[in-house]
Length: 403
Image 1 (cartoon, rainbow, N blue to C red):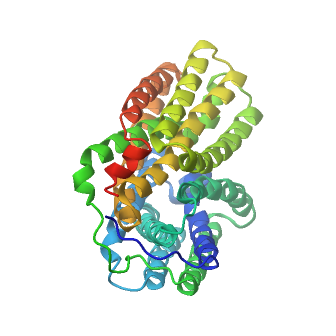
Image 2 (cartoon, one colour; image 1 turned 120 degrees about the vertical axis):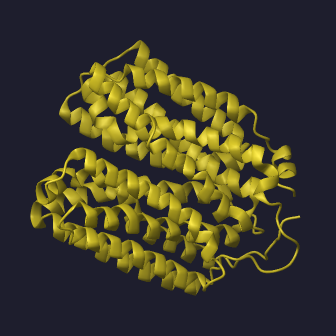
């Protein structure tokens, strides 16, 4: 049997969620890195490939931070851990703001920003899920909301960065982001303290079944998430260029990039909400079906308007899988193991970011189009349907979770 904690007083959960929002929104600006490409190229005299490496390393840093965070659980109270991780992330951006070369930028943005951000994110995820367990609350919806904050942060950050770069320049803009992260970390830590959030479950009841006993479930879930994320991150990172490649205007491309990011954010919330009402695997199957329909639509009717609709469908498929996967972790492993398993699951996100998006760019350089990448995505979504269909559902979910 999994450890069960008494329901958390209702007033404390909203405070914890505000802490998550405050901390996660500025971290989500990692998705808006493309706004800094031209200013960084001009300021540091570096190439696009080098900056792509810095961005990729930042995603790796986030993933490492997520997986290292569980080792910190018993070292200090949750509010101190969150404040410390936020300080590391803020220091990384401050170093990037003062960078005079690629090495400092890589250490600051590519390593410290990601490590601290990933650690803070998983600490807050773990704490919120412990507060929700045993209270009959909508865990899927809450987790879907939390994972939606990253693209929402990018949607807010990108236009703000564009305005600040135009008005004050690169270094001041990055310095402002560093100050925002530091302030957000301080406020989040105070809210964590007030809400009495913990990241270690109280003793009693017995330990949850270790993830190792359900390795086959984890690797199926990992594969489902990876296959959706590979297609979704390709769309998220290259939507504007893809729409233009299919004949869309610059205005349509910019609209599509913003709208698709919003669709992904909404789909993440929807994926968690649906997982509360249906089984998470059923949501994942439907999500991959939606994305596959988008792939086939674009292959059958290549054109600007069709590309916007198709890319939105692919992105929403990824968002639904992301939200329902977050809910599935709570169902299969319980709140006590949430942070550890979620960190391992997000390795799939990191792997997806350095596979199909890069392949898509390479194929575009060779062919001048994205048909090859869409065909690969279609194959991945079809495989995702088959893999998701093999995950335990509803009654079997609880049995698999050892409850």
